[in-house]
Amino acid sequence: MESHSQIEDAVTEWLARRDSGRWSEDDEACLQQWIAVSTARRVAYLRLKSTWDMASRLRVLRGGTSPTQSAGAVPAPGEWRRSPFFEQSAVAAPATVTAPRRRRGMLVAAVAASVVIGISAGFAAYQLWSTSGDRYVTPVGGLASVPMPDGSNVTLNTDSQIRVAVTDTERRVELQQGEAFFDVAKDPTRPFVVHAGARRIVAVGTRFSVQRLDDDVRVLVTEGRVRIEGEASSPVLIAAGSVARAAGSAVVVRKALPPQVDELLSWREGYLRFHETSLADAVAQMNRYNTRKIVIEDPGLAAIRISGTFRPTQYEAFVRVLQDGFSIQARNESERIALTGGP
Amino acid sequence: MDEDSLDNWFIREILVHEAALVGYLLRRWPHRPDVNDLRQDTYVRVYEAAARSRPPVPKAFLFSTAAHLLADRMRRRRVVAIDAVGDIEALDVSVEEVSPERRISAHEELRRLAQAIDLLPPRCREVVWMRRVDELPQKEVARRLGIAEKSVEKHVMKGMKLLAAAFRSGPTQVMQEAPRMANDPEKAHGKP
Image 1: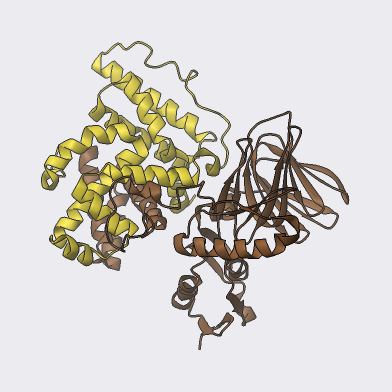
Image 2: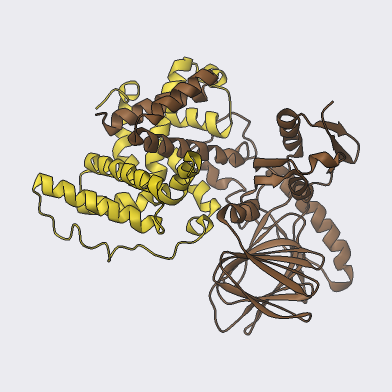
């Protein structure tokens, strides 16, 4: 019988060869045959391959570990800690804005923030002070982590805006626009309340995300429980592993399967993950992150299912995959990219 | 039950517990090479059982399988170990299994991956970084480092093994393995 270390050696040899670029369909068939011989081979293969695949997710650090680093130069060990991706508290210096000038200040802030994000593609939010609490803004394509004074943490997705007010009796976050994930520190004496339009989402200690599109509010709970309240409906309790959609007077709750949870929260890593997602939904998601919009001109394309991981701001790569994988034609226009069926 | 989804289930529900599993085994059988064997034997049994029917609480099933294998091995070796088996109850196995999201945040996962890469021997680390992070072609990596493509491939092989050990089992294992392999990179695969 093969020993485990012999198997491990053989697996890495296969994987390294596959990785090298010289790899044919025949090779793949041979590998699959080789794996099928024993479970010991299969589990060793899964263990090594899954870790190796995962390592490619460190692409987010590429070229970003220090401003002077050129592509392909390997940074010193530990250098990656300085990557904007890991510097969660990389919040720009607060700008004091008085009430009447707030709008203009906001605009300047948004522009400044988009410059920061443009350079680092990492975590950064712009903070503004005002009398009614702290405001945090992300530009289109931005992603930010906002630590709150009570130990809670808010992750802000693209094109989002919140106002945070923490007092002795209440922790209040107003989601004015966009989407946010809340990691709430336990504190029974101060309820944590997210206001999203006409809805209030009340939590004590839990983790959940809220997405707001005008008055359409979606809540995903990954831990603990939250209560959705609103004038139009009676309170609804949402448990972990559920996703609720509130629009008009209705609140619809359904179970979220792990792939859906993954899909709905992948933005926090700077990625969008699709599992058999319709092209229409995937494009709508991508468009939230880019000012240049992708438009499906051929209605026949909308139902195509796609899976994969994409950087939301790199819409060119997304379009290229569609062109290569589905023979979809893309027409570049000044404000948009139009997708049509094959020739 | 199709194979592919069983594979994904295994990665998602079983492999994520490797650090805890190795810790558990090491506390009861403090001999690293044996523990690596026990770990793989446990995986084989869990995978085969799950192919017939998937256990409702994967983590608990993983640890009870490991405990049985350990007991078996002790009987054969005629070793008496205090507190070796029979304490599955006392194990920190939470029955409450939730979405994978809960276990380890993506951020934390990336941090641990980066740390695991830092633990690789220097040349191996350079190769892994260029291939995985910068996504340079193998040829280009060979050119930049002035080594043969075959050597790049060898470093990749070693990197895969050490990375899996560091990321999955936790850094202690690499500290034990890395120096030995670092001194003798080209021969490292020819054992045992």
